[in-house]
Image (tube, rainbow, N blue to C red; front, side, top):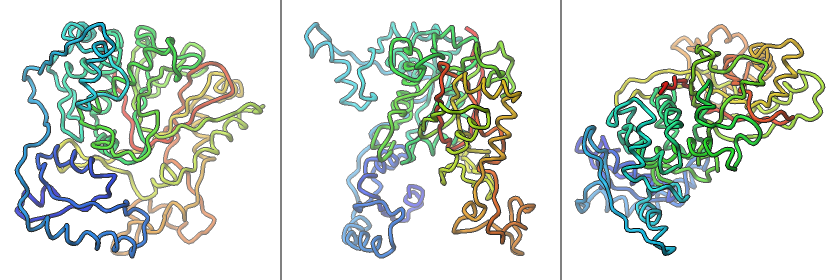
Amino acid sequence: MVAIERAGVPAVGIAARSFARAWQSCVDGWGQPNAQFVTIPHATTGQQADFIHRMVDEQIDGIIQALTTIPASSGAKRGPRAAGQATETFTVDMDETPAGMDAVNRFLTERDWSDGIPVIPPTPAAVEQMLKGTKRAPQDVLMVMEPGFGLATVEKIAINAVMAGCRPEQFPVLLAAIDCLAKPEMNHRDMQVSGHTEAPIILVNGPVAKKAGINFGTTAMGPGVVNSANTAIGRALRLCLINIGYCNAGAGDPNFIGLPTKFGMCIAENEEVSPWQPYHVDRGFKADESAVTVVTVTGPTTIIDPRSKTHEDTLNNIASMMFYPNSGGGSWIKGWQSAQVGHTNKRVPYQGPYHPILLSPSRAVIMAEAGMSKQDAQEWLHQNSRVSLQSALGVGGMPTDADGNWLHHPELQHLADDPDATIPALESPEQFLLFVTGGSTHYANFFYGTYGIATSPVEDV
């Protein structure tokens, strides 16, 4: 839309009313704040054609007016600050009155610079202290955060880390998580602007977990003082996505219903009691190194496993969760997804989704005592979590060449006419991300992944 306007062709967008703020945030970010649009009552997804026509027909006069009227000129509400430019500072007066004590939070709320929960004031001294938690320079840029194209400098990340309640020893974990988001396979842009209830989960491995005070035992994803590091790191990432990426609720982030998981999720593996090698070793790191893995997920669903007597009982319970049709339901058969590389026309294919299964130590022990390695368990899930090939092909069928040959997985084309044919829900066993954490119990949490996965080292400070 913005590109069409810049080419000199008048254009008018049509957006559902619930997308109005998201539209404005998007065109602001692209430097075209006056891009014209009209609104219709409902999103068109899944609606019948005649209903869509009625909604649009009711806006014909508005469309004509938008096409024939030059909008009043106004600058974009905000834009990315150039790298190396001095950070803008503000002065907020505080006193001992209730209003004075809350002055900073009111100031941030008025500008939509918060997640809605009271923050720690990011004073220059507090930010300087946070920066001592890294060897990186304050103006180093880790990524361009979408949809507002904000430059995620180390200093800006530190500001948000202070607001979230992080300590300097936790800062390297946050920086590593943003290093992960910067990789194309994370599909960061789609995660930010999706109406889906998806959010990043930070998985921590190695010595940094203890150094940062991350809880990996009982209630590790719950509230409480014992989880202060988990909460602060997860929240800091969300504040960065809001304040640097301009992904504000209802604007850059049009998530229709949302989930509490969007406030932030960070958890470490309980390596001390796990019978298997740590997850970062699966990803190519040494056990004594520290690494962070980030996956975009929705959910979770609790796996209740109190009556399992064998490892197959437990695995069957996990496998029963694998059939959310729009997240890994055999969609790999049509080829990999792809993500845009930065602000170029290049796209990178990636394998996905990855489904994190946060497995309590006792559930992992059940499998280990039966002689199963983690890879054995992943292979079992891969072979036994299956979907109908016909459902995976869907209404549109498979992409084919001019001769009708499948462009992807031609070795399976002979199954196309078999109504009973099945394929694995996910393409490879590694996409069942087994992560041993929490207290020893019969529960586990299952998240549906949505895009790719990335793992980055944590700097040793």
